[in-house]
Image 1 (tube, rainbow, N blue to C red):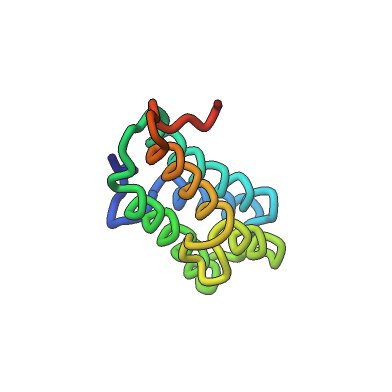
Image 2: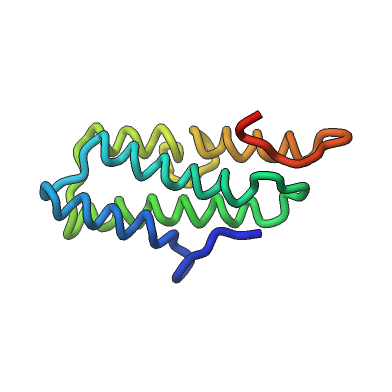
Length: 126
């Protein structure tokens, strides 16, 4: 399993970030939260019902690279408010690598459910 990407970046989130920047010349906290939820949703949708964690770390890395790309563009062409930067750091960790924060918690949840004895697969919705 893997999230569909172009150049190892989750392009729907990158495209939406570009649109957000163009709408007000900066990405706000609410827009950052929307992007994060979109990326979390991609991970949830990809692994819903999955009985294997194969590809999970790679998908986490794709989302982390996407967050880093948004930050990279924010230092060039785009702008992120400080609150938006804080949202991304909360979701992806201070290094934006996805190894801590909300994305890491979601990854851990997926792994725990898939590895559980007699697991019927990952279910975010219960």
